[in-house]
Structure formats: C-alpha cells, structure tokens
Image (cartoon, rainbow, N blue to C red; front, side, top):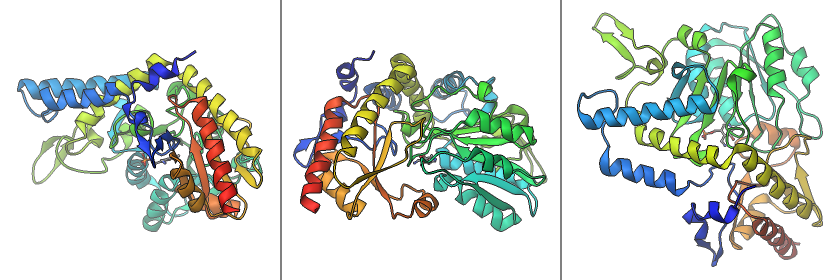
Length: 404
Ligand code: PMP
C-alpha cells in the first residue's frame, strides 16, 4: 500500500492551480512530474559540484564524474543489466533509437528487412525511414486486433531470411497495450534476429529485467520516470555494442586522436561524444531511488486501480468511445466523444484544470489504422488520486453537456 498524500507532498507542482481550479495532471505519459529529491539534487549540484565530467583531475570534476557514474550503476541495477558498459546515456528514447539506427544500421544492406508494429511512436518509425533512404532496407509492419493487441501469428510470419531487426514498443503510448515482449524477443531470436524494445512507456510502471527479457537493445527516457528531461538510456548487450561503430565523433569518445587516425574509447564512452547532461544524469538517480522506495509493484497497482476506475466512469458517458482494450493494459486511457474534435474536448478539460493530451500522440500510422485524427489521452502516475479520477470523469461530463 502507498500513502498517496505523503507522496504528493514530494511534488509541489501538484499544488498549483490551472484555470482557477486545483490542477489535475493526467499527462504523465508525455512527462511525469519530478519529486523534490530530484529538484533539490539538481540545485545541490549546481550550488556545489558543477564541473565537466571525465576531464579534470580537479576535485569538482572528480566529484561530478563520480555522481554521473553512480547514476549509471543505478540504472544498470534498475534494469538488471550485467555491466555499466551496457548503459549508454543519451538525450532520450528518440536519440537512443537514432543511435542504434545510425550505428547498428550501418551493417544493413539493400533489401534487408526491419519488423515494426503499427502501434509504434514516430521515434521508432522515422529513424528507420531515414536509414531506408540511405540503404534501401524494407520496413514490415505487424497489425493489431480490434482490442489493440499485436497479432503474434502475423508477427512471426513476417520474419524471413532478410530480417535484420525487430523493433517494437513494450507499452503503447496511445492504446496502453502491454506487449508480450519476452515472447516477441524469443520469436525474433528463433529466427536469428536481434530485438530492440522501446520501453519509454514501460519503465515508469513495470519492472524491467533486460537479462530475463534477453532483449538486445532496450531504450527509455528519464522524464517519464519522475526524472529530469534531456536524459535517456540505451541499454545494449555488450558484444553488440562492442561490434558497433560510434555514431557521433568528438570529445570523450576517443582514446587517441591524430590527424591520420583515431582510436575510440571503450564502452560506454564510445557512444557518448561531447559533454553530456551530467547534472540531469546525476539527478536521475534520485528518480530511480524514488521509484525503488515507492516500489514498482505498488506504483503499478495504484495507477491501474485509478485508470480502471476512470475508464469505467468514462464508459458511462453517452458518446464516449475508448481506444485500446487489451487484456494487459497500462494506466493510459485514449478516448473520443462522438462528434467532438479531441482538441475541443482537451481545451474544455483544461478550462476545468484537468490536463490531458490531445492529438495523434506521435503515432500517426496508428491513427490512420484506427481511422481517427487523434484521441484525448488521460494517463496516470503514482501521485494521482481517486478524487482526480473523479474530476476527470465529471470534467468530461461537463464538456459533453456543453459540446452536444
Ligand atoms: N516511444 C514511446 C512509446 C513514447 O511514448 C515516447 C514519448 N512520448 C517516445 C518513444 C519518445 O520519447 P522521448 O521524447 O523522451 O525521446
């Protein structure tokens, strides 16, 4: 059990008002709020430790480097990776996937095939399209059923001699579907194909064990996990990362440079050119502490209870249609009100202090597949309350009575 009121006291932003009403923040899928421990850690580092990492012999640089590397080990432990060499810091999930496309993608040849799913975020579509322009690879897309679940038979049928990668989300940011990624990874491996998992929507809610999953790459973002923005993670199996060329050149990623030749640094630094967001990275460790102390099991149970309650309440409103009815579903509700554009509904909710996301959610191919321009999306975090779920329902009722 969790004490939500105690948790909320760690998130002062939740006390603010929007449109004269107490804020109800339900856009956690886009970015969750950060607890005081994260905010204060950023301030503490700015006040007392800020210096560039891995550069100086001086005390501040040594301290800052230690803070950053402590965070790397915390991330390693959080996802049960074998070694810190497998944890690459990036700017976010998007950059992590671009890194894999730019580096691992160099071995792909014309006609090679990548398997994606129709529910992917643009971050797991566009980098492969950019690669396709350079190397003429092919993209194959797995369909979903009416509930928003992946068609596993079709998925398996898409593998061929030419398949070089399967890349799919763990949890859909629109439908909330929790994909059977362990099974999907095993299928890929049976065909001798590596698998990349976009865990942006899973890492805040579900225990990730990359060794148990046996994924080849796993990517996620700090800002969706109560951590600072501008920090992402690429986990990759060591032997794969070792076999991959650097994707950006610059300081930090080298061992020796002459004008004729450069020897690259060892992992993980080979993939971390330039000055990273070392303060964000260091403060991310406090977000992981927050999640560990609260307990992922407790977090998931609480969020799902709220989401199921809100979904039930919304279903009772005339004209509401819910998108995403998977058996295994995260704390995300995408919905539409018949005859009402999602933006109009979103604006009326904002006027009542309820912050939800509207639009295509960076998943336009999925919107096309569903035959809609977008949805309204409410998503829950551990600090949300039953009262807030009720506020969502009544705000939608009020909006419906105005718009109809
Ligand atoms: N993949 C999924 C499933 C997401 O939900 C998001 C964020 N909405 C991303 C990728 C991109 O994450 P970021 O913007 O942090 O790079």
